Amino acid sequence: MARILVVDDAAITRAMLRAVLERAGHAVVEAADGDAALAAFRETPAQAAFVDIFMPGKEGLATIRELLELAPGLPIVAISAGSTFTDTETLGWAKSYGAAEVLAKPLAAEAVLATLSRLLGR
Image 1 (spheres, helix red, strand yellow):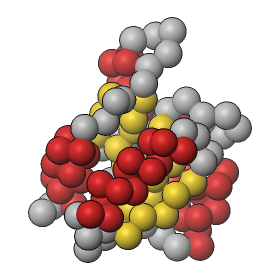
Image 2 (cartoon, helix red, strand yellow):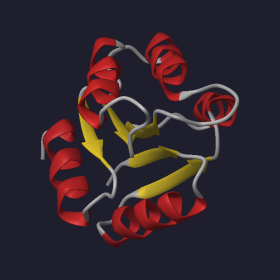
Image 3 (cartoon, helix red, strand yellow):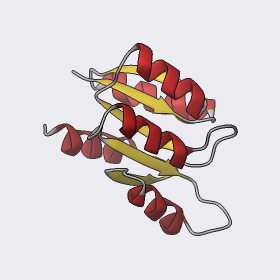
């Protein structure tokens, strides 16, 4: 199947996404922040990415922008549990930075797989 980059500072979210994606036959590369994500992507490019918006260090919007500089057209799903702004507002920002899709946390396995399938054209 595909190699998927999962970027989130929350280990529980990375573990959940890994379990769902690997069960569907995908290979998963994890990163806990934007800098680690970019380093991992340079070493082993992925066919799609799930990127959290709010992380310490390099946050999600900058990470999305830099991933797309490395791989224009990379299907990126922005994920967020929200902040002092509404979920839809922060996820809307992610779309303006180039995310192809957005999902609000908590993530549902079915939504993750359906979104990825759409993005990969399967």
